[in-house]
Image (cartoon, rainbow, N blue to C red):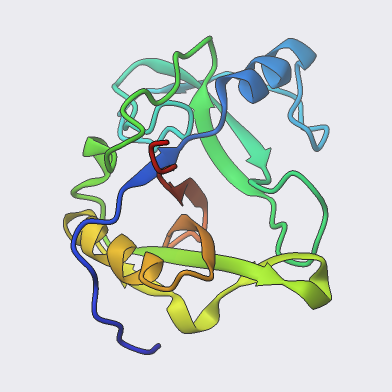
Length: 174
């Protein structure tokens, strides 16, 4: 990985799994890969929820679903397990800030993507990958977005490899 000097405070947006996507999955009774929805009682709490970007509390009902954070097919369109609320959830509303419940998360991978003409889509920008904990999130995001060719970032759990959430540049005001 190359080291890049980070500019000060690039504005960004954090994106959980969209509530509409999860409403469609709940209504269908299975995830987009045919896995039946089976409620799980999270007795201990602490599961990373990808619907509202917080950790579950003891006793919450969850689903473990297969999820692909890409709309279309492609070699980087990985599918993996994620926890979401079994019932309706308002989603993540503080999308202009790094999720508070992920601040103390151990090391995460901040995996950037840029356009790749040969793939007719986005590819991992291996030279811009960063790793760190939630306390360093804004610095890592600034370093990655210092490269104007980066389109978005996926954060992943470094131990399990699971998708956590995506990050985009904030749209400039017009």
